[in-house]
Length: 219
Image (cartoon, rainbow, N blue to C red; front, side, top):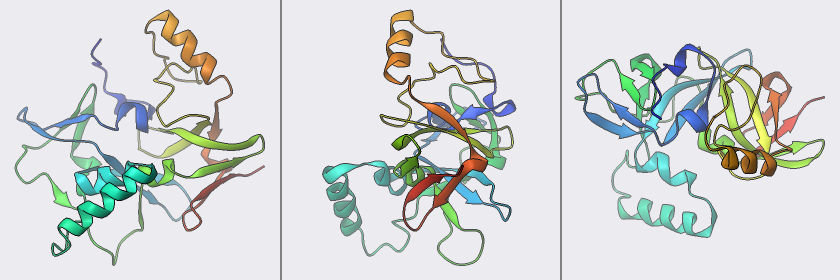
C-alpha cells in the first residue's frame, strides 16, 4: 500500500524510509534516486542528516566485498581525468517538500543537482553508507548497524543494532513511538524471530570513531 503521510513530520528511519527512494521534482519529473545520505556532526556532538546524495560516486561505496572493491576501482580509473568524478550529486534537505513513498522536492528538476563541495572549508561531511559499514562494539559482542532513527529536524536520535544487513528488519520492529509494518503475518513473524536480539541504542550512548571505522557503546 503506498505511503501518504509525510514522514518528515515525525521520527523516521534513514535506511528504511530514504535509501533507494525516487526523488521527484515539483513539476512531477524523476530527478534521481537516493543513493546515500550526507551526515554532519555539530559542535555539541549531534549527528545531523543534511542532504540526499545521488549518482555513481554515492552508490559504489555501498557495495561491499571483493566484487564491490573491483567495481569501484574500475569506475574510478575509467574517468580519472575528470576532477569531480568522485564527487556525488547533492540535494539539500531544505529543498525537500515531503517524504512519502517518494521524496518530493520544492523546485523543478532543472538545476536541482549540484556536486558535493570538495575538501576545504565548511563542516566535515560523512556518509550514511560509511557509518553502516562500521562494526559496533557492544557489551553482548560485535554487532552491525541495521538502521538510524532520526527526528523531524533530521538529527540522529538512536541506532538500531543487531545481526544481518542494514534495513533487514523491513519496518517490522516494534520500537517505541513508531508504527510497525502491518504486512503479512507470516513475514512479520519470521523477520521478528530472526532479529529478536536487535535493539535500539540512544545516540548519546554512541561513540563513533570515523578514523578507526568503528562504533563503541558507552556505559
